[in-house]
Amino acid sequence: MIFDIIYKVILETSNMINKTPHIPVLFNEVMDSFIGMSDGYFVDCTMGYAGHSMGILDRFTNIKHIGIDRDTEALEFSKNKLIDFESRITFHHGTFSSVLPTLRDKNIVGVLADFGVSSLQLDKKSRGFSFTSETLDMRMDNSSELSAFEVVNEYSSEKLEYIFENYGEITQAKELAQAIINARIGSKITSAKELSDIIVKTLPKFGKIHPATLAFQAIRIEVNNELGEIEKLLDELEISHNNREIVSLITFHSLEDRLVKNRFQKWSKNCICDIRAMRCTCGNNHAIGKIITKKPITASQEELKVNPRSRSAKLRTFKFINKMEKK
Ligand SMILES: C[S@@+](CC[C@H](N)C(=O)[O-])C[C@H]1O[C@@H](n2cnc3c(N)ncnc32)[C@H](O)[C@@H]1O
Image 1 (cartoon, rainbow, N blue to C red):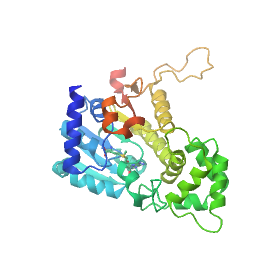
Image 2 (cartoon, rainbow, N blue to C red):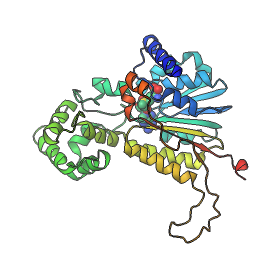
Image 3 (cartoon, rainbow, N blue to C red):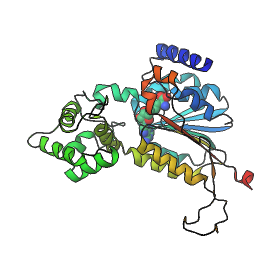
Image 4 (spheres, rainbow, N blue to C red):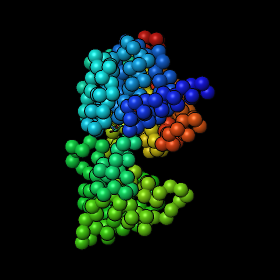
């Protein structure tokens, strides 16, 4: 209770001082997940507006920090915000899948990724993520080639259907793909607003959720290769983790969470024998670490009141094992 009150005060004050365009989710829980981390590098793969990074720099004073974001606007904001910690930070512009392999020689002791988009990306009309945007963009990195415009105006009906079905889990994926194909005959679809109207006319409304939510999510995932990025991050951690490295990952929907959950389970398994095997012949010592969060951590009632966007956040933490300790 007392921590919730302190958190709320910190949030309100920091928002007033820094005009933070994004409130970090599960802030206390993320900080707690790294307790015990010392002497090495901490990598914030999705630095955004440095809410989590600031907390880490503040609490873990003997840690060096590496901040990554593919969005230059976010990175510039964070550079200013963290000016007092300048001597302990390096910033990298790019995707975490491309930057992480370049850090293999560093003694990394903590990795955080808070997937998805920031509130600023969602809210700023010119970024083209919101239902009322006049543009059709949705790129987290505005120097990357593929935008929502190409996806919506150039993808085949089959490709659109695949995206809606697999990245949006939309049951009427075929109908929606066809509605978009029909709408773009004659003139291109040029704004997110226009796209949203097409979706609203095609899909039924369920409860309070905007009918275009899942279709927008699907297009955004495609534009930014969001699931591919998570897979590559997990692959990289699997190959190059340090002993004792703590990894905390925050997901926002089931497609993301499934990837993290399954990989953590794989890493924590001692036995890798075929499930049909009658008895274990693999040595039963293949786990490379342990799952710290048996169940994902979600936002408290207090946090939900302050930041409704935290409602779908799930935090999972994994700790790699020191091979010497394992013996
Ligand atoms: C939810 S926000 C992170 C907010 C941050 N934790 C904070 O406290 O301000 C996600 C950020 O990650 C960035 N991002 C998403 N996917 C990325 C990727 N594959 N590589 C690098 N940055 C990414 C986005 O541009 C966005 O700024």
